[in-house]
Image (cartoon, rainbow, N blue to C red; front, side, top):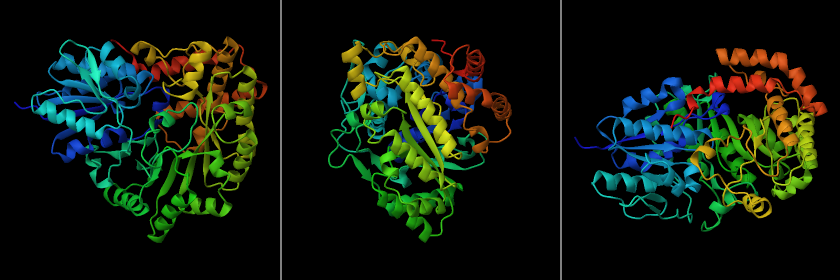
Length: 510
């Protein structure tokens, strides 16, 4: 029997994956050229199958499967990806396993050297390398060297050609194989009844944030590192999703949508001109861009259905904001928050990072104080749980960490699997007191803004438990945050127990 079917797997995520679950758009983009070439592709999303995902995935590994691909981020997905590879090889050793995604982008040799069940790695944009790999394997030969594809030679040594980051991968919406997912109602914010679709309005990013991989990845892009897509194509894409899949929420997953305000305004104008009724959300918005937004512009955003702006506030310390090149000050953040408070239809969703190199306990206190002030001055805003900084290879702050503290990225895949953004791990510049303070901030951030009720979630058991916890713990969380009291954090034990319960499917048995 000829092998010609491709199985693409999205692994379980960490704690946050229990509350927000977007469709695996990365797999759809990676599969676009393979599907166009006539190959049969199946998407298996392990997040939808609970503790039994391994057994259910194994039933998909049939004699027709040529290759299994898995999309991997840092943290627990690294562990889950190894389990995917192990399950595949136990079921059928002849099936090839390929890793892709953000983690694979920076660690191709590490994956091949340490996981014997994995055969190839795609580093960078995935559509072209995956097609080349599939066509080679289907023809019964090893793939020729191409940018972004890594494998092993006959002696077991890893080899590969670095990705060619001279152009962005732009997939026309008609070529995105949306049909590979049978039920989009399973995605979005957990318990939400929205039919959510993630799309791009622009590719790349022109900024140089010290913690972000984008400056390193996009430095060789020909022309502008931020490239907006055609406004007409974007709106056609939205209309297609509404007509074909009854989409009612479009989430723009650009690195940054508002580099040119006129680009977004043109999208809004065309949406209005066509009378399209849909809710909108934007993942990428910066304080220096919101400073440029007039109230008229924000009114237009809200009137067109915009209800979420994800905003990188990052820190309450001016010194750290300068260090990470955010092009703003704390006062700028406060002024933008006050501006957004006048537009109650838009949820300002603020992201923060703690554990940055040189960050002190006083810096952390500034950040927690900023969180509280943002809520006080804009009760409609939402505070994201703070991410613990992860030094990504190739970033400016990774270089700083290496030069000043001799920091080295984890050597083993097991250690990478522990690097959750919501989990404690050792960074040489973070004191024990700062670790305790981060734990307090993490726990408090779930409750201080009443996000459980603001986001209008449903009535599943998880949501019921979360709402009860919110009612009981929110006053305590606000007191802890207000006074910076991180001692005797017995509730951390309850949080860890709850997280272990929710994430039991992520346990690594390799």
